[in-house]
Image 1 (cartoon, protein in one colour):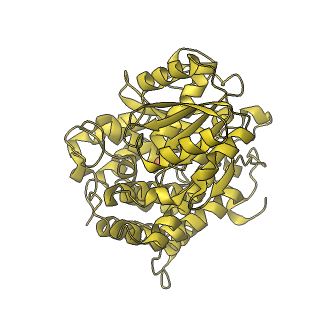
Image 2 (cartoon, protein in one colour):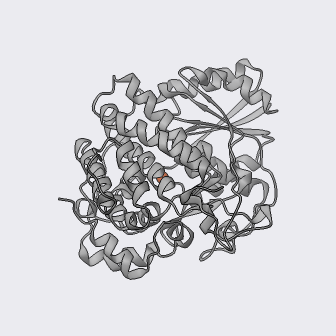
Image 3 (tube, protein in one colour):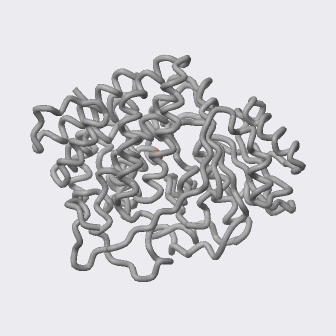
Length: 434
Ligand SMILES: [Fe+2]
């Protein structure tokens, strides 16, 4: 496709793939779960959720809908925030012990990702690392399809209902890695924004910044034409770079999150804002599921690996804990100041879509304008002001860098190359924002 950002290159890819589940969006759509699941051929359903949603009206609605449609249901609620190898294998055991013919997941990214990964190990048992890419595994492909999966997100950030990825913590290495396979893309998603009505402000903020960074990272990612050409479609990586499809979804997501994030955090009764954030999260999921993220997500894994002196209230998980969206956004302004040089127009466009005044802006100012707009939004929503506010200091920069360097493909998906020294500088620049 010939446009300036996607200009053909000699050995570069000349095709990109778009993979999407069937989506239903709107208030009350969880009531459709039964007929949707039956339509996917389910009769005995494993319903994945977590202990906090277990008794919620959303899970009751889903259960009632499934039973009204004549399906039988067994609930699995032993999902932890930030799923790990142990919790995934336990969930896979639950799936293996019964005659399930489908999975419905109701929850945030942790629940949906647990369901995706458990489906793999229940059907295709293997050593846990086998399906992960280097440096921890050999990237063995998932051998074939898994059971039908209907995903119902209850937070406005993850986008996991639209992706073929699951993020899992490896206990032995104490850090997170991505498992990727086209077979774990959910078959359908029911996205009911009413689920966001009761979310606490800090959860709307952290998930909202996850969606915001998904959208900017997709829009500013290395162009797909700058990745190597892959002739075997089965080998085309899911992190394939920015492309016209991811642009389309990311631009709209940026406009929505720019308009509604602060409102949605500050006022739980602002239905318009919270509904639009849910749609923005879905759009950003559509984008990053088909392009991949880059440095902000790669560097976030260093943060969750090494966090220690931080307590986050309002989450059902032991300290130390940093919500995913915060681990991403604390580094983002520093990173976009660095990456803008390689794609100034895209960084400026992103800032404009987020609501920054770019009328007098020059390309050289793109990184600073985008970073400033994000920092303003972080302040308006009480997000920690950089790594220093979540327990890190300059003494941690080297270790953070060593940890992040393992996320090779995501680092390479940035528009600008970076080595270990560059990444140290990015973390140093993220300690505090002024
Ligand atoms: Fe994310």
